[in-house]
Image (cartoon, rainbow, N blue to C red; front, top):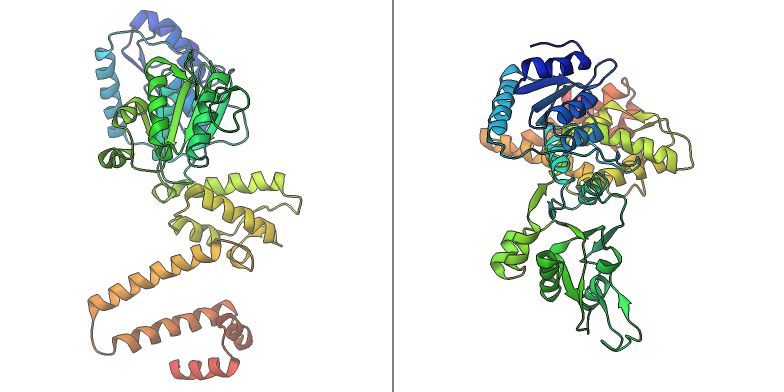
Length: 436
């Protein structure tokens, strides 16, 4: 059955009672999210797949919060859509209970998760499904992938969004200080404890606590955290009174907790308690299609924050180089490179020169690693072919290519080409004579 508007689709529900609705997000009068919300009010068990050409983080999360089965980006192939339809219908048949979703407020603007790649779309879906519940969430990913932003997204889309939120870095505090920060202490519990202190779990009662780098939490503190997860109770350091709280826990780590469990560095029972809902964040090298959008976001961000001439964009060749780099420091490294480049850039558009000049920070290393990788590939190909004069032939060929490109970039100006190559004009003349 085909409907040409959201209102017409709603009118069809009672007459035809479909098993599945496939709807566009961009529609006149009633958009796809409004239609989804209305469908879920009338028929909570009806599966809905939304499709759109313009995806945003908030829309994807909101769609999953409101109960969409899936959220597809155009263009997609029919086989992919049909596969999702089959999965959605199977899921509907397996549903034993009705699941409803409340309409919570949008996540505030400002710092947000950026990306439209399939890998990030999967993350948004997980956030949308996990946020409405009070389930403990474990966010796993390399340093710099944005785990804290995912934690904030879960919080802002949860029913506790009007309650306190606190971020605790378990790696930044010594063992005793971490335990006293989390659970508090009684007067006289240790030297210097001159008064009773209320810990963060008591202060955050009803709210959400984000335990970053939980893999670095000491075993003794892990034991007390396990008890909170089991029954919401604990005792202050040096105390005998049992305190009961209602706090949602979101944890994150860049470590392999399963491997730590195997070596005894992390409690097995705690691992299963915090791993109720697991969200894995992909490294930036696995979602390079998002780099352009991330760069655009960071340029806009630092145009607001930096009190200097506004940067209008980035050169195409510079963008290509940034998109092919492996980014071991992930999104955080990319942001630092863009920020430093904008500070040093005297032009309207960012270039590699801005990022690799004196004081530009990590970009020289990044750029050199790109060159290193290319050289390694060329060397490997040369060894595969082999033959006499391998070394001299390869060096000569690379040298000739550099000279040819330098002459092309300077339109045949030998003085400028020599400067570009970092050699004297006389040396360049000799090389040109050799290769002519």
